[in-house]
Image 1 (cartoon, helix red, strand yellow):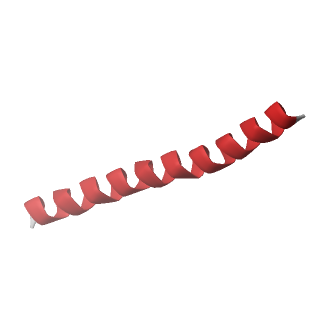
Image 2 (spheres, one colour):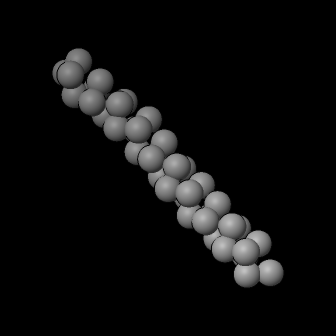
Length: 38
């Protein structure tokens, strides 16, 4: 039970973290492309 809760809590915290990093990198890349194009 404890391991299951720990794994769920870990994934619950890590998943949004990776998603946020991916979105930040994507947005940053789009912003850089926009600046370079303009």
